Image (cartoon, helix red, strand yellow):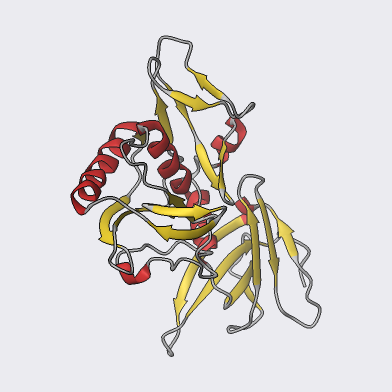
Length: 276
């Protein structure tokens, strides 16, 4: 999976050994620990990390081999349904603001066991923080990668973000950028863009908009939200990329086409990038 697509039916579950059954920016496999549940902090961290990025899917009861899905080996149905309720409780108690999630229990594609799928939607309003309790929480220090505990007598909030197949803890400068609702919405939409994209140059202060190139072209979008970096490569005679900050994007929208397809449009500042 390269873009967040909620899994709501067993037929949508990745198949073990399939090319797309690999952990990454929008997919995470969790082996089911018999007799041992995941900590509330770990669950909240995983959900918030997806919500602060492009959204994603957590699958409990999926054994990975490295980054690839090896097999499904989940809990009985009753335990899976209990875990659905527990995940929802954890997110409401530990995430602020609580992101939109869809936890659900379903049988694996072969019907041999049950899994719990948690669809975590991207938060377009503001970054999601995870409450770390002063007394009983243990978390990984973002600088050393080793377990650490709160030493002060009060709760604190950390801000995780999914990056590739792992999680990054945001620093204050990155959090500030992701607190802008317009920017967060643009990032979430840019992650959904397909290959049929029209880039729109916008002359600020006027009504002059220019589409480059026409619809139906295969363009390339590369983005790193942690570094505020956006690269747009239109397929034209010259193939010149445009590089600039993400916050130079004025708007992103999807335009339905008569054939049922959708063309994504990006409205850019006049000063964005190199031009074509």
